[in-house]
Length: 411
Image (cartoon, rainbow, N blue to C red):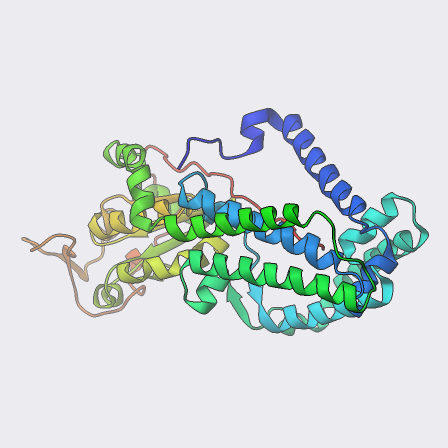
């Protein structure tokens, strides 16, 4: 990826970042206001097919952002994994959309446009914004009564590309074409139902449409980087970390972090099922190496500022391969268990009489211990007491801040 800072705070400092946020918020509100989004009758006319400004303005913003984002990712200037995508809860989303739609028709505003209207001191906008705040309060006080439904039909970070199983470029071109057709159809409805005149300066509209369509075609042509492409870009920096042993953490450091309530440790055991069933660390998640790629979207959603991912195999070979996949896809705070489960057992299993070390282990990334039975995490070494060990090691875990969720669109 391009050598850009991780955040505006790193680039401009704390207050400099807030100035940028303020300018973006002001610009967004200004665009909404000059588009007429502070006028409830203009917004409500959308639902009677008389005034399609909402469709044209908001969908223009959507397709422009979409084309710029995926063009930037295709050119290696942006990592799409670092952009927050709201997880999908299908039925709660449908019900919530219906409730918001009814409120939009009755009140003439959505939450965002009501704030724009309130900022221009329009009485209906002020009352709608106050009603929205009351609704937020009411939701917070009653959500426990329908929390099961609220968290139902979870699909994770679901995109159109995932749903349709199509390449990103094909979806981008399709959405842009759909938007342009809707823009044309919206103007026909405005003329037929709303009595509007034909828009003037049609050459400007055609040039804008051609530009955005050309951008979508560019996205289709350049494609999106694969995980291997991403790793190739990162390899010079990350291979140095592997060689310097800065991401391989001692078993003692893993145990100390497991006992730390301020840190959420997610252990990913990437071995095959047979080895995992023989022995694994308690609470370690079985995620075979060939399934790591598919699990990355869920791991990205699970990641937080205090989350550490530790990948492990019998030695380090499979764990290192998994580490490369996760790092290439920008999963934060990923480390490798130093020496793998063999080293863990050497440190914490030496006094277990049921464990017998293999004199001459064969092959790479194989277990060096013989187990009397496949007991999984029921061996004492699977859950050692952190207070019983005083181990010397160099701490290596440094938590990176994760990007947070952000709102978008009209709401």
